[in-house]
Image 1 (cartoon, helix red, strand yellow):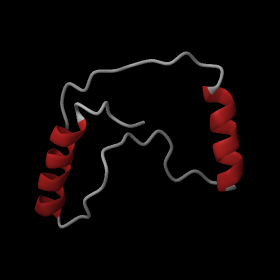
Image 2 (cartoon, helix red, strand yellow):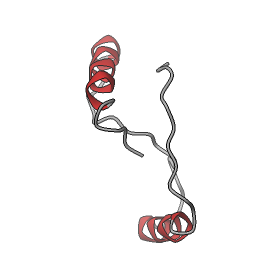
Image 3 (cartoon, helix red, strand yellow):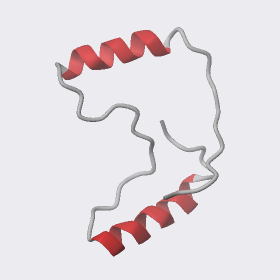
Image 4 (cartoon, one colour):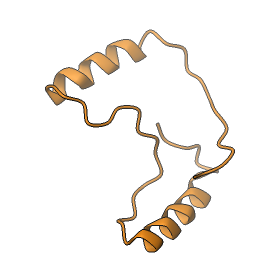
Length: 66
């Protein structure tokens, strides 16, 4: 998931602050829904696309970063 264009710059700034604090790489703002999934990446992507095609589009407001 990616933030709305209006939220991108503030999240990018926050990510950069954390990256500097923890000597970590800077990355584009996003929300990871699946991490460290065991299995074939192509099969996981296909399963996610299939499921997401059945769900309505939704929005969420970011209230804080921690």
